Image (cartoon, rainbow, N blue to C red; front, side, top):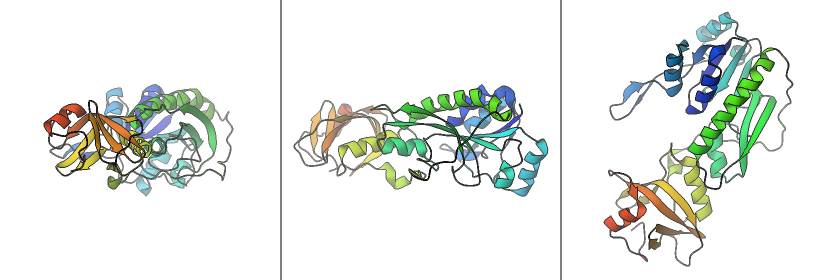
Length: 304
């Protein structure tokens, strides 16, 4: 079994590790500037592939004719894809014997797009899963081979859920790819009903609002943490949220400080406990320590 593995995000790591003996080539995104010095950095998939001794290529555009021709010349059994970050052309998909096989972090046809795991948590969905699918030229529109479902924990964050789904994806690849390469599998078209789109997270979505419903804003925090740095705006700057829990209903205007231990803030139809925070330009601390240092008191407006 000779596979070309297309992956970039951390979701792709367990599958690469599990399938390393069958992966002849890793295709990932080019190095990008990162960190304080904005130095060029390799992504985690490239680093792991290098450690495993697997050749790596980093095309700027996977649709480029020269790249497609180079992949076609290898006559791979399949292109295995997980969190790659580019749409593959039909010609590229057709270059492998069994085409492109994608591990997608949602229960398709719900969650098509770049941020299915984040959007599912933000929506407060009770469950999600990983769909193993045959790729076509559309965005996550190909036939379904298998779906593995899992519940979403009440307090589970995007980062925690992604780690679990990544392990599920690795198990799916291990169990199914030998069958797929042998041609011993069936597939069904995605249903027309239930299609939802999961677009990339926009910068403005990372700000929580005390005028929002407490459950909605808590789900937003869970869906953003830790990759997207969710925060609450204050007059002194952004207060980054590290650990948050939903609390009960309160009789107070949104934005009112309810208590300091733990730091609890009124939202519309509920309240949230800010257990761990990071003020702008400072180290992480407990919400209570932040409140004491900022001389906050119950009854005050948090954002003032």
